Length: 199
Image: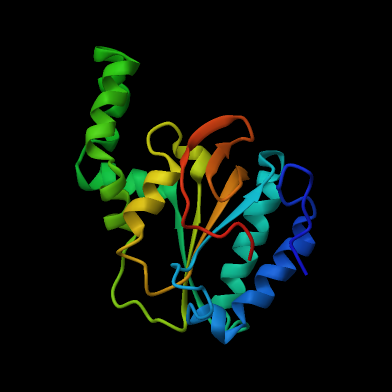
């Protein structure tokens, strides 16, 4: 059974799609990254950005089920916007961002933030110890909230060697055809070849 999709490869029925995700989260082979033909266990779950509120609610419900012991996995949840604000707090610039923008302008602020909130910094901030292969699943959301500060393909590329021992699921507001990511189904968001586009 495949995830219900529209012609554009985007999940149409989120209830049915999340039922499929839930079924994968109880599959020992999925949790152990088995049967991937040598590929890493990275998955892009494309959805229509118009369904963002429902998507967030369903993702939160999955995390709650995991925390309550209703799933055999531990979902490690990372919202990229929360990761970004944590990076800025750690660098002690979060409270200064409005003033920096007022004094130097938006382009200069974005340039400064690009140097601080690099893809490497995002992945480092998302990492945790110890990973528990066979149990842990990293669930990433918030792609649209951090665009254009960081792009999804650069997060995935930098995460490959850090999270190669556990499944990684990126909830993506757009389209993915196993070659290219299309944010909001229209903006070219970079090439990425190593993720599966179905769960």
